[in-house]
Image 1: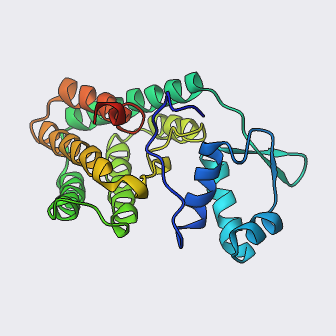
Image 2 (image 1 turned 90 degrees about the horizontal axis):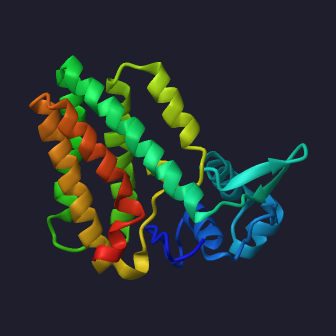
Length: 231
């Protein structure tokens, strides 16, 4: 990957999760495309047991950063900037469609409560005016809950399946976004903007504004790959 993408990248802090550390090695090119990865070798290099490595490899395969070769092997997948940008744009279009359908169908109380709960968690996280390392996982969880609730509310297996397939492309999934623990001041500004998006989406749904909420979700998809250069 190149800096042209400006993804929300994670540093490799001591004690960081195995998943985040391996994802960062791929982003940095320390595990270049075509590299075969094995549980034993990675566990030894990271100083951990095979179990967290196995779970991390499964997640990285689901994210599209690894691909199977042969019967049991995994290699780092080759991907370009254009691949990532297109996948992110597709996710924005699909999530925008899901949000518009939810608005036009009339968002039920359960959806609004789920989104509001995620929004409130975001407010609490950002209220102190800065981020601490523990906030990284907390944001990831609330962000995942927000997006999942919205997609489910569309009531369309077709949209849900299309998003699930697209999520297997590198950096396409909302869950694949990571934060740079070495630059939390910058990341605070980025999450503040993401939080504003979440609140605007919730407001548009309450008003049943289909076109507006669709446009908001399309824009929201770019938080991870473009907004960093504006901060």
